[in-house]
Image 1 (cartoon, rainbow, N blue to C red):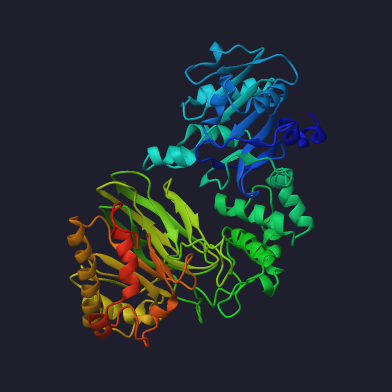
Image 2 (image 1 turned 90 degrees about the horizontal axis):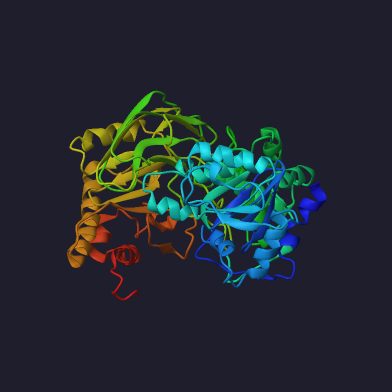
Length: 545
């Protein structure tokens, strides 16, 4: 099958078919290689739901929901014409029937001629089986398969997609499985314009020729952000040049928000590229979340130990400077697996916002899936370790190339002396200020003027608010609530969730509504944050207003 014929696969599969029924909540796929083609997308080209691959002499269709393979094993489906189109393409025009391999353990049990194999990827196969399946495809076989990756992760706590055998198979045939949920209507319409990018390989080549192409910039940027790394085969210099040549109209700032839709799309794509480029600072980072006036003191071989009793972010006490790669070495851990590292507390994703006052995605998260990982951030931020969902876990890590950042913990018996030292020596731009039941992330300059007694007073007030909610609910604390100050929350002035996100005005120590202004808090409270904490605490049968 030559390239021109392969380019026609979407039209062939949707010949006389205008849409495909939506099954559950599909995930998303990334067609990575020259030998893949996007076939069906949801709301945009970053929501790929079907990918076609040519693998040796064979053909394969990968679906982003494990419910789709079942429609090929029944005659009672609303999508029968689509199924027949798939049959014709997969069998290369030959007479063939679909055969499930969900329950078989060896490819020796498979008829090699006249069959199209069907695999629900949640039926685990051995590495030997998958190797034999690849050989079967290479020799001219055909396969329909699918997975709901986010669903697999939800049922396998502490696991990563790299632990999922089906994703390793997909990697081998050129398809990247993500843990995202697709945005798409029901039914999902076939829109040829959304799949014309073909695959990431073609999108990158097109972007090199036309660096300001919005569509390709979005696709490539989104993929790089998803992979958490630069793209294989793409020179870093190519991506750096795209960043360095960015115009001021796509660099967000609080005093000059990006409101034009095309510019927002370009900015979002550029942000995705920035998420993975090593040794580079994002343009405009000085405005938010901030940058150092002078080079900070960089520390190496720093050991951090975290004891966890709940799934939450644990601040390491260190800051990652924008553009300086770090290394995290896992020394030991006990309990459940599934720890992750996060740079930056500003986790709100602004891709769908009507304006951009900061870069759309500035918090970087990466699983601690091995004994050592490297991370970098073009934006900088506090370094956190995220614990898995289990009652008792611990981890010890060694950190390289980090900056000491101000931290305060009401539960630390030596906090007074510790804070005196922090106020003099901690250079990180953001602080982690923790009570027993609540934590605040705000600029370091907002808190360094406060002494230990002042912090204790404010934190005890906020702790009493959290405990009042639990007393009302009749529950005990599971994890500490977290409040993050952000230039631009993803919804409204502030919103609930983990973390609760609010605007920067409450981080101003000279403002009446300053988060740690005990005199005002004890007299007037803080209605907005009380409201969002209430949302986090509310029961399903309570009023939502």
